[in-house]
Image (cartoon, rainbow, N blue to C red; front, side, top):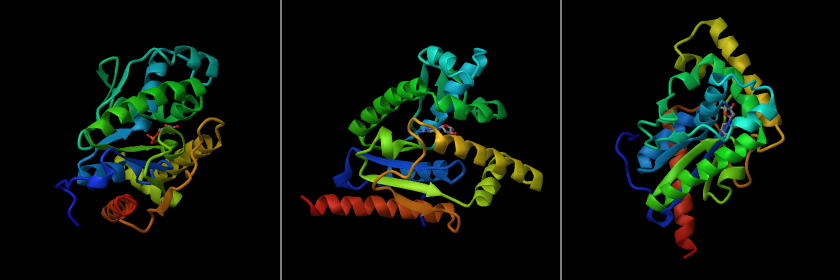
Length: 244
Ligand code: DC
């Protein structure tokens, strides 16, 4: 399968939004970036925005378990996401935080921060502004937890990715350069803890959105999952053409 060169997104779907939701470690980021690259679309990692907010709050010494304190400060940082799928960037007040937001401190604090409604409202505004800009220019693959349900409920293509907890932990630990059994077990525990909070929160929990196609990625290679999602885009394109 050819994924390195990009082919234009189908014509009928100019202004296309592809919503990719799912659990931590289900392959969302690699899949979303691969689909965007293949179709010549932009890419937005909304998880990175929640991570950047969390990084800033921790640096400011805000107690991330105090929802009132988080709400009071979350309007302050200037968070900017670059949308090149081959080089997604993230800055806070002009500082590149791409590495810092993947560290243990942020991993351990991002779920409670993401549960604060004021944080979600602030980032929703930023996400919709990026989507509006990029859909005028062509189209965008957006990944997160609430994209198909809240951020872009009208997206013509919605995908919900999941994978067995063990497969997710092995992939995530390998991404972080850790492969020992203890590392994998610790990674699995941390992924499951985040899932519990992400799925249980009151505002915009992780859910399979109406109309989302569920793909369990466990038995598939990355290339196969990318191919499945591109197939869904082509199906949506054919539907739009047929309805004309
Ligand atoms: O996709 P990720 O693991 O980088 O996301 C980090 C955290 O951000 C995740 O635990 C939940 C939160 N998140 C969210 O609440 N809503 C989104 N749209 C994306 C991420």
